[in-house]
Length: 119
Length: 112
Image (cartoon, rainbow over all chains, first blue to last red; front, side, top):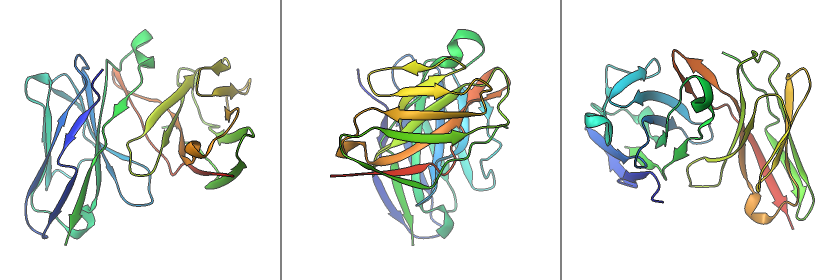
């Protein structure tokens, strides 16, 4: 079974530039997550999708970050403009479904992440 | 949201059992305890989860206290490849879906 695919693996940009990350979840997985992981910290949830709808984006800095999941499959996360503090690993994860009842137990699978360095 | 408390680091001798504790004293009745681990430069990997009964799979065992306020992840025979950051997570319900909220985790160092 193919895992969660993310690209690029690494990206270096200057502050105030724009950047986009791409995620292809495991086939059939309805729930998709984007996390930000700053060095030495645990992953921080930025946004969660259920199919192509946003379930939670309370931690997403909406003045500069945006995310979409067209057709409920692939997703892109964009930062515009980037700041130095955005330097982090951006992780994408997916799960079959994450909801009430039996489906609550479905594990989330993570991609390798994209390491962003803003200089 | 229920929070978890874990020791920042632990050491374990190779071949011995690694017991990683987690405190989640504010857990509510319908929240599950999940464990993930993250090996350097990789994404987190699911290990095990449970509600109130002890659970075991090919990777580990999860022991949850009767009052559900704490749990222990047990790696029965730790190897060098088990060196990683281990996250204990209480699954938070958000509307009709749940989300995984990570804390700082425990860095487990398995030593030869």
